[in-house]
Length: 81
Image (cartoon, rainbow, N blue to C red; front, top):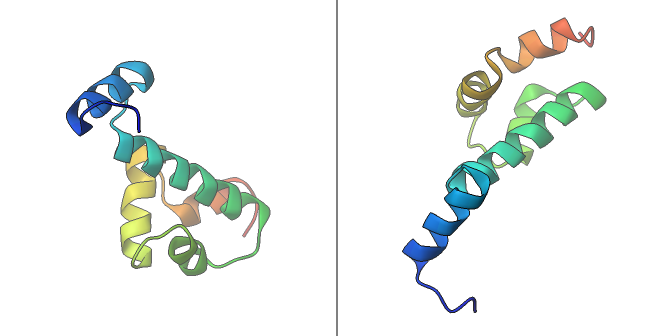
């Protein structure tokens, strides 16, 4: 539709955003997960599943990589637990 190859799209996307398309999407999912942790009483497991992660451990690992703390620690720090 954009009349460009996949590799050209990926290169252009990274130049514009600083991230590869999947990394950009993943960052958005983690941001939405963090918002859910802050604004809802959903369990970490339910949030992980809603964000498309296969289990809590995968969500926890990705969350820690981006935010440098676990989802549970984030909630504690924000005074939610």
